[in-house]
Image 1: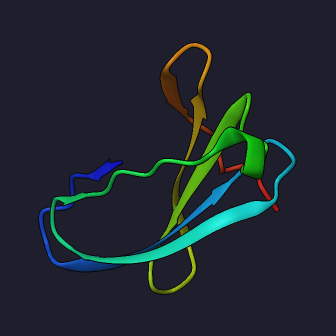
Image 2 (image 1 turned 90 degrees about the vertical axis):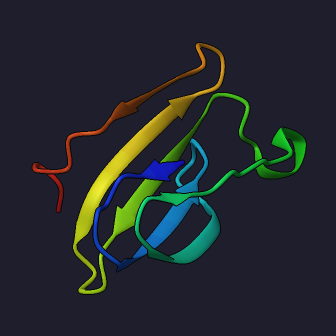
Amino acid sequence: MALKNSTNETYFISISNIEGDVIFCDEVSGKAIVRNYQFDNKIYNTDDSLTFTVSDLKGKTVATYKVDRAQKTAYAVDTTNGK
């Protein structure tokens, strides 16, 4: 994952499996942040896809991305219609 922020900021990242179970959380700070994640699909049930949610310090969701393992693609999820 790469965040292309140009100023030092802090974000919270949560990664969930297709059932919506959060399997990993991370707090990252800095600018131009890059992180690599690897999960065992047998342990975390990540056969189909993962959802990455990036939130700022105020808890506001900045972006949500769904990563499709089979197609090796990532696409943004519309969060404007959420709860």
